[in-house]
Structures are given as C-alpha cells and as structure tokens.
Image (tube, rainbow, N blue to C red; front, side):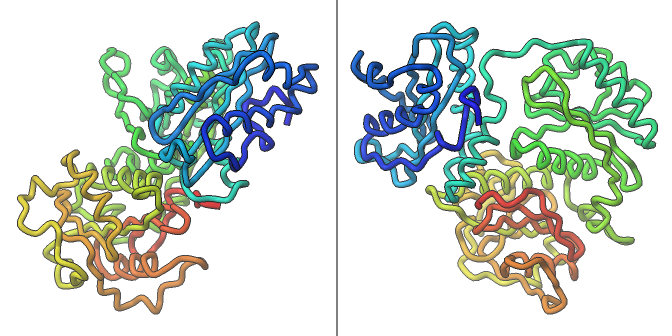
Length: 443
C-alpha cells in the first residue's frame, strides 16, 4: 500500500508496550517506510522534543496527533492492547495520527477522525476478539471513509448516476427505489428523477420529510444497525417487508454511496422473492400476524448491539423467540428463575428504551428469551422444545442455538433471532429456514 493510504497493514499492529507513552513511540516507528520516502530522519523528530501525549477518548481509545513539517498526506497507525496498559487499564486501542503542517485540509481530516472515534458503532467492532489479520480488515472497514477534507458534491456526476439508475430500474422492471441518502447532503433535490416510482428513503440519521416534495416518502432508519452497507441493505429490505412497504413479488433498485462522500457509487437490483422466499410460505408471512413490525425492528437493532458490544469485553451469544405467548407457553421451560416475573407489562416491554441494558445483561444466561408479539419480555433463560431438530440441516460450525431456532420455527408460527457467540453473526429464522443478517465478524 502507498504511504498516502491513511491506514495500512504495516501500521496496524499488536502493541508490545506496557505504558501509553511507550505505545505512542512504538506506533511512531511504524512510519519508518513513509519517513524514508519523504527523506525524513525520525530520530531528528525525537531529538526535537517528546512525542505528544495521547488523549483518552470514550470506549477504550487513546489518540495522539503529531504535526510533521511538509505537505504530508494524512497517515495513521493503530495498535491494540486487549488487556489494557499498566498505566491505563481501560485503554484497548491506541492511535497515532501524523499531520503534515502544510497539507491542505490537515486539521479537517484530524477532526473527522476524532469524530469517528467517538462513534461507538465504528469502535465496537475493533474491540472484539479476532486475529490480527481480521483486525486489520476491520480497521479498514470501520474507518474506510477517512480521507481528510469533506468532499464537494459534483451535481453533474450525481445527476448522471441517477439518470442511469432510473433507466436500469425501468429496464429491470423494478417497482420500488431504495435510496440510501446519507451519501448526499442535499439528497432531496434529486428525488424528481424517481417521481413516477415508489421511493423508500433509508438513512442512519433521523430523516426530515417536511418538505412538500418528499412529504409522502416512507423512511427507514438503520441507525442501530451495522455500518456495513450490505448488512444495512439486507436489514432495510427486511424492515420494508415487515412494514408492507415492499411485497414479495417486487424488484427493488437500491442506490447509495459512502456516508458523507457527496457521490453515489452503488447500484443494485434485488429480486425480493429470490432473496427472501425461504422466509415465507403459503400460510405464514415474514413475521407472525400478531407480532408488531416495530417489535421486529427493535429486536434486530438489539441483536446488532449485543453482537458488537458483547458484555464486559467478552462476546456473548443469545436467542430471541418471538410469537404468540399463549401458543408458545407449552413448548418451553425455564432453566433459571424467570427474571421478568412480577413486573408490569410496560416495565418489561422491549419498546421501552430503559430495557436495553437489562436485556443485554440477561443475554449472558443460557437459554432463550421469549418475547410476545407486542414486545413484552415473558421469560429469559428458557429451553425450547424442538421435537423436529433431527431433520434440520444447517451449515457446518453452527451450534445448538441455531439448530433449536430452526426446528422451533419450523413447527411453530414464530420467528427467532440468534447471535453467534463464536463469530458474532446474526441470523433470522422463520419457517425452519435460516437467513443471515450479517456475516461473521470474528476471523
């Protein structure tokens, strides 16, 4: 990789240092290659004064910024210390950012990175147990859009992309447009290209649709889901299906780009039936009739949070069974005393934001959560009765949670969401079929 690449393999390391000061110096020497190419003697930099002290950020991150004379690109080194440092027990990641004092947009680039490192959804994947090679890939993905100054929009390029997208959508017989709008600041100005088609707006932010020309547009928020764009795409289509914004027989044209990049770079036509047919059958829809769409959405969001955060620094697995409580009650039994017994229905409802930490805490229990269709948590730590498990065939490496979820949803009109403890993968089970919502995150 070239020295101009913000993050490279050689500058993404396991730290050997015991203190934060030593860690910054260790990261400093990973810039030996770029220093040589630029004709800079690193020892002269050290002789000029001590390296900057690293600043503690939330989420176990420490960052130091080192100004270097010249028109330097923005370069960063990343070191991980899963067990912490002697003088900073809570630090898990240390970053050293080199800034050329004469580089255009240098300060703006540093500010972007500092904001990114405060974003918990970017940082949690870096803290998961994984091999060094997997960690290097995760760094690149989590901070993939770090390239210094904010880009300016090219209206003609965006317009050309959208015109071609519309032509492709028509030629492919798409009936809907799924528009991931976070790439563009002024995305509303471009909606006229699709005014004769059904458009669904997808964003990680709260979308304002007060303007007259977008007042009727349905919106989907993926703010609680993974930053990986294909994961967001799958989640958005599932949410649209659960809200009846899309139907099984539709084709949808998906358009997007990197968040804040001011350009569009992704165009994908999805046949909903081909991708999601396994989750439906003649009698059952995507979600049971008595399960609210907002409960389904909240469960997926909680599953993403558990997969990313784990508990107390350790990955955990979990399973949620969602359906009609009266029909399911006879088919599970408690392994522990029910922690939700005796609480009012509103107090133990998933839609209550104060329940998030409680759910994450009890996720470490063996067994499954049982969730009613209106979001009420009926039980945790239960064993489900899956009599047809011998007929379930899943891919290698999947454990008892996945087998039980497949067997249980095959027999009963319910759905299950499973988080794998070993890989962090999130899977949806319906009608005995498994549908991965995310890929494996531990390599």
